[in-house]
Image (cartoon, protein in one colour):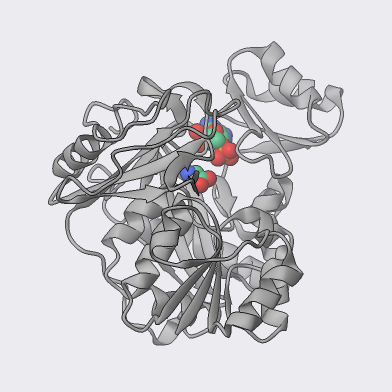
Length: 414
Ligand code: AMP
Ligand code: GLY
């Protein structure tokens, strides 16, 4: 099987790595990829949101499967275009990707499907925003209705800041604050059935102790030893299956990964958000542990054949990833600095590239999140130690990372 992966981040490096490990996959291509992906896949200079260019590349390469990583091409309809050419595609249609592309659409589907989520109001005027903030009280949660590349959500006790964020957006969803540890669950869907990968936890704030601005994610780990028994089954039954069924009823079959971001509140799991793609960096740890061959699994989703698959298996033990971010991330990350220390030096750890490029024979930073260092081990403590041991070898001027990823003392893990 020949596969084309669309995207260029750490998630796509993890996908390419997983595909490469599947013996039924003979070739991995990536558009556009990064310097790390280039070591295991053939890169192609194509803009991910350009449907025509992606389809033309897939046809030229004669691939059997296209896997779309990021949300922007999904929302732009790239998966629809690939499927229209008769090529199996892992990734939802533009209509289905609205579950991520529009917060109000997601709320609407959840209401109709009876999926537990925070109460909310969709507001288009300042008066509506004031009334909604009044209704819920602090901490205030104000979300841009559309895709905002991780910058759309403000959670604050400062009413003025909440109002200012709302004023900067055309349409906002004001939501009740959901209190409790967060969990990311990825469900693989083939248009009808769905299966869950093991849950992971992401660290969204930039600095230790959950301080600083929201980011795309500064680290992740799996499994979650503190999670209540039966959590995955409960989320599948209460959240994923009703959502997929509701979309199906509306003639919008869901093919790809449905990412449920949840808060485990005192009243049970509540959906914070849906994404139409794998989470980044959670995918880096979840795929590390996946034993089921990835190419065959994603192809089964793309061809509606999930029901005939054997149950998914993941290896025992744990995986932890620590993001090495560029100076000034997330505001205005500095790019173009040389990265050293990338050679494998720690057994049980490896480096996935996110924002990197090759320039004059050297690898340089080319994005906010530059690297994902993955540590593996028999338990979280070992995996975490491996990850940080490997991080210590990396040299990148101005770079920073959180030191409390998967730490036992981290305040949100009960
Ligand atoms: P998002 O951009 O939708 O991933 O949201 C970013 C982060 O904001 C989430 O991971 C949560 O930490 C936080 N957040 C979003 N909605 C809520 C909510 N209703 N209650 C508490 N925190 C929230
Ligand atoms: N790690 C969070 C996300 O992918 O949205």
